[in-house]
Image (tube, rainbow, N blue to C red):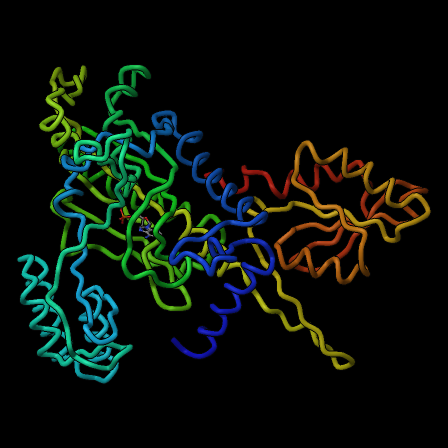
Length: 487
Ligand code: GAP
């Protein structure tokens, strides 16, 4: 990471805290690793991202419905899904520093270092060895590779490693008063299984015909051992997932459809297309016959934001097997019963939040020959902005606060607004720029005479005089979801 991008990322994290977007969890107790809280503007931004997703998935598609399943589910679900047996990371400890690492990540980092040093042959060979070891689940081989390639602990600098062990990522707790094995219950590591186990409930109660989708937004929990890069890898996070049930044999055409549709959703926000790329999986998970990540270029490199997976009939078949209940659909068009195939779209809400924040953040130099000046502005899409407009009386007297509040009351049913009367107008503009408010409305003495106000635009900083009774329409047009959702 170059110094400037490193600094930029640090500045974004500091900005997120200073302006009420993201706080470290339990901060007064020195924090809780890889857990974060969303502040007053963060919660609004997050809700707006959710609304954009929900509207584009559920509202805009007549054959997709949304559900809200519980976080706690029957423990057998996680056996059927493969999470109890296989949702593991290979971990290794350094005996001197007592630090724990993901064995595969130590090796990935080494491959990256070989690449940077121009040792591409070594990089390729190690990648091949790593792939083979992971595929064969060969933990001894992983450790041997760490020793052979002389990988040292970044903290102690020694190569005094333990064996590699599998570490399950699911959090567990107990349900009920008696703490024995039968009561062990997991905090869901993905929202998807809540959709699969409700597949027939939704299909029957909604008389849904294949192809159709079920969408859900909710919390997921993973005991990530290596917490990295702010809200990129968290232990408690939110997913927005949609499972699209299709006739077997048609899955590739739907996979292509959702791969394109999901990238379009991202690009509609106006993000530079060059910042996005697809990453097709070559090593497929046991349940998938095709998979791709949508990656975004964060300051620390391209990282997955969303995955599109063709999951075959794996999940429904597994639930059929483990529950003993039929998970079949009768297709009247071909007069056949079958277990549907599934295309999944799964986006991390927190990663999308970080992407949005980083993409919007700008430290703008406004210096002129006469004076040095700058501002930090969040150029958020107006639909996503936490506050849509701020209302300022020019002064605290002469009836201006009363008039400003009257205008605010006429708008607050439709928009989230802020009222501010403290400090000079310039300072108030800067505070709103920093949280991405698209409009500032100033009420002055002329307002009392002709009911016009000054409307200041965040991005251009241009000001215009407009009738107060047109504010509703002006703001409404700019923040309308139609701007994002129309084809
Ligand atoms: N149901 C499929 C599934 O869960 P995944 O690739 O493990 O697939 C989907 O997760 C998305 O969830 C990722 O693309 C990422 O955006 C987000 N995600 C996964 N683990 C995360 C974590 N520890 N912290 C934040 N977001 C995470």
